[in-house]
Length: 124
Image (spheres, rainbow, N blue to C red):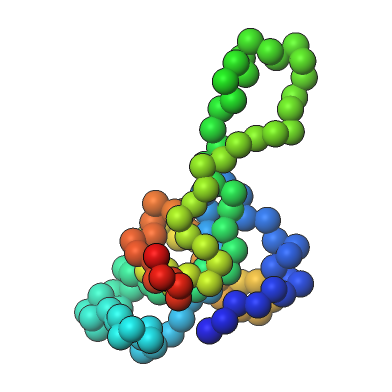
């Protein structure tokens, strides 16, 4: 599955440390042969899906931020980026995920802490 830029995802903004994931069917497995045992899939504690979009990451405070409140708000917020990237195959805990439907397709919003493992096409 190759992720291509699509207008419908350009309108979506994923917030903070969250990731938008499109689930894959339980019987599918990756090209490298990674699969989950049937017992785990049946209980649906763990899901697999492709990362469609990621949030900016964890916000970090700017040094001296409290001392300069009189200057007004600054738009330059810095973030610690997420490990997940668009196109990665993610194995995640369903318990931490929020299921939603967008454009008649099922997706999950998942915090990075609920992602157990990522598989990336390129060499690490």
